[in-house]
Length: 44
Image (cartoon, rainbow, N blue to C red; front, side):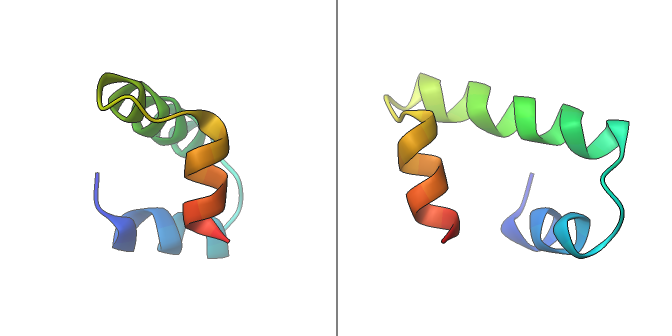
């Protein structure tokens, strides 16, 4: 999942698909040793 897709998803309506993408992003980040807080900081 690319940052571009995440960005376009955030400007649109929040959908179940977006929720799935968020969960996948968080899952991938955890594999890399990142936390949800790291992701939030990155997105600010």
